Image (cartoon, rainbow, N blue to C red; front, side, top):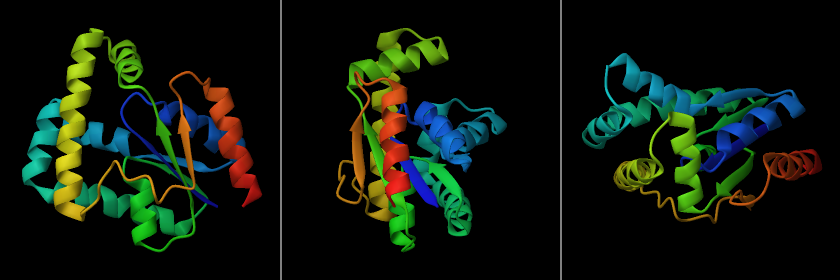
Length: 175
């Protein structure tokens, strides 16, 4: 079984992904954690590293190649902004999920997680998302606002993680 889970920062993808992977006995591969780790390894902030990635497509391509290679083996939940697009481009059979969430709620969550002021988190989210939109359009021709490839689009603005997990697990078992 192959599942992809995508969404913008603070939408709840990590929480839902961990819980779904545990429920279904799948490995959880988190592209965001890998990207943040690469930034730390270079001693850079996430926004500085993202800006560097805007001019060096090798950063995104190396990460995406690793995620796709693992996805080909199956029995994994791949969590990354582009996971659904990556498996679609590679013609892999997968359950592709996108999690939506109100921008202010996402900023509140990120602020709590990263110990930032909510206004600062909102500004950082906007900057990061603009950088990613630019990179993904330039490198892959992907419009992140296009949800047409997803089998399931959920909204976590008010829904509890348990509810979202139940919907994903149900959809996975129905496949």
